[in-house]
Amino acid sequence: MPHGRANVRALRRRRRRRMELLVETSLIALAILLLRPSLFSYRSTALLLSTVLVLISNVTRRCACFIPPEWAPERGTVPAWRLFVSKPAQKKANQLKTKIVVNKKKKEENLKKKISKGVEFKSSSKYKLIEDLLDGYPYTSLPAPEKTVQRDPFILLKGKVKRQYLQGMELPFGLIDPVKYELLKLIGRLGDPFKNLCSHSLTPRLLIDSLFKNQPELTFDEFCYRLEYRRKFLMPSYTNVFMYEKELLWQEWIAVRNLKEVSPETGEDDHERIQKILQPDETTMPIVMIRVNREISNQGIHPAILKMFFDFLNVDKRPDKLSRDYAFLKLESIMRKLKNRDFLEGIKPDYIYFMFNERAKEVFSSYSESEFQKSYHEALNHNNMKQNLLSQNATYKKERKLFSEKTKNSLMKFYDIELPSFFKDYVKKKEENYKVIQAKINKMITSKYLKRKQRREDILAGRITPQELSVQVTPEDDTQPRRKKKKKRRK
Image: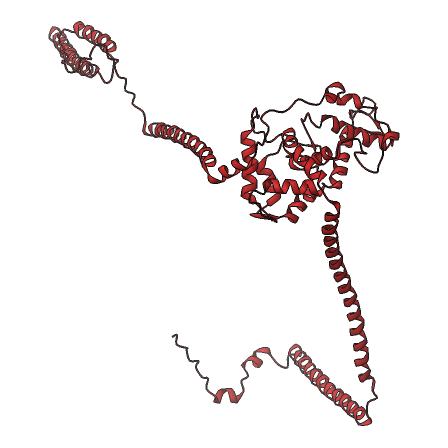
């Protein structure tokens, strides 16, 4: 027994020594790794080393570690932290970095392009040519509105316009200056449309695109047609010059028709309907605005005002041709010279009025109606001649149809002649031969049908078996050998 106990104790000592050696070697390796400055900071390495030394000191074996001077971090420098990331995560991070860099580059390029475009536009020869021809357009600051507008605001006109004071057949019934009214009709067609109520400020790009479409040039007739007929009139909005005239036109339209303006909002009795039920003598302001716009757009523009605007855009000074590029550049240069212009705003209606007011008065006073009547009558004669040609063409077609019917009837009379007797005999013989041929065909079909019927009856009665019929071969078939088909050679 004592010998056995001694052996057990010796085994335990050996195992303990082996465990101590394993712990010491692993701790030494860990301490060496901790001393690398690229992985951990100086403080963290010191703390971890102290714990390692404590662990080693508790063991019977002693161990010492030395830090090489190359690994010691410099004072004052921030230790670097290295983070080990998986490959997919690293790839994603790199992609995000490149995306940020690319977006920054794109923004810088876009800014450079915008700056270069503005510089190129202003330094171009076309812009300089336009700049020389502007002659003080446009006004940098708007003049003060009229005293009448300040003294009598437009809202006070409600109910003051009476029917007995209105003279004439159409708006404005002589209550607005004709030059100002013609300019109002022009400005209402030039602004950006907000259908079907009003128009906003003039944006050159939108106006030129709607006038020229895909054409580089326009004639005067095409220009008048597209501006006067294709573009509808819409009352200019946020204007001080036409603030009085707008309300006056609306109240005139109501007064002439003996209507009463009511609120478009529905009451509780209408159970919150979308559209209000109006009486025959009632109307709402949105309806009045739409109807007035439609009536003014049907009136057209004075030819002198149209010619004035055409000459204003015609920088080339060609008599009957308007260039798209020059028209756009002139309007664009005016818009760029405006002061106190809001973001994304074009040329205000008031600016357009003050640009054309003086020139419109001169053109309106020097306008000769006789010359216009000549050109107007020429155009009317051209249209009448065209209409006459079309009507003559229609009458010619009718006469030609009648003539063709008459000729057809006269030609058909040749077939009404009595046939000779020998032709009648020929037709009779032909019919008899046809009957004979038809009888032979019928006889052949019936005989074939009877043979098939007889064979079917013989098979059913047992006189003939179907195998015998299939085996029966004619002697002609036995004597004549079958020819083999020759295969065609492919080329």
